[in-house]
Amino acid sequence: MKPIVLNSETILGAISLEKSGGLISPWRIFHEDKDFYTPNQLNRTAEIPAGVRITFETNSPTIKVEFAASEVEVEFDVVIDRELVKTIIVRSKDTSFTVDGLLASNKVVEIYLSQRQKMAVRNVYIAEEANWNAYPSLRRKWLAYGSSITQCQAAESPSQTWPVITAAELDLDLTCLGFSGQCQFEPMIARTIRDTPVDFISLCAGINIYGANSYNERTFQAIIIGFIKIIREKQSTVPIVLSSPIYGAFREGTPNLVGFTLIKMRLQIQEIVEIFRRNGDDHLFYVNGLDILGEDYAGLLPDELHPNAEGYKLMGHNFANEFKEYFK
Figure: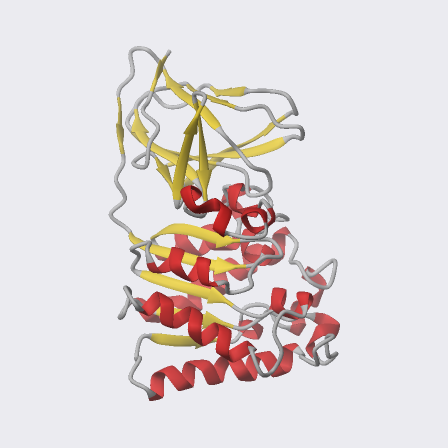
């Protein structure tokens, strides 16, 4: 077998790629500045390649993927011409898998990496007699920022997260900045979004801030307004959707340690959008998280916070319906 070239043209959905010891690690931050993303690269979530996929075109009937061993089992999805054909579950300590029996005709291959565990890829091989080429995306680029609900650890598999489902329905090229527990609207993430050219941005605000008691009614709007202002320094007219939390069970009306509830947060998030629009920003929009997953679907939140696999699929379809009007 022979290797394809792994670089920014074939590894999509990453902010940066770190090459070391023959391995390539996709990062969802600028890894050269990783020490500035405190604490500890967003508590190590920036190394988890949610939404990252190896993408190329080939006529090979066989594909082999090599990667660094993990201490736990890891999932991959193999998507051919945008259809999920196989979910691969790799046991701990294993360092490769092979997919055989593919059609020996030209096709677009996407290998989605785990949305749960950090990954470092060594090589991707095709049959010796086969051809391949990079498959440059002509789709509009979308960057989605959020919490564990955007990282989607409980999704059925790496290509079944709500951002991937939304991207597929709207024909978008996804970069997912869902960081479990870490959606705190820090300036370094604002700078990352500002410096990543895209056609569309979505920001999910509130649930991690509620859980960590990070900001109160005095500081919540201020930090999000500053975050958006940093993005606007370079991306002045890119559509941004600011969404409030999905249904949060007891969090709806129960104040956290700083006196905030999700009900109050939604009002303040909507008001942020109104402030920007009153001041001339016609490209900032509001989506109510209850329109994405409301109380009627509380049964899809087994821990009263995170959706299950069915819940993430519902969110993917609902976000696609909400977002599509902003691409007219």
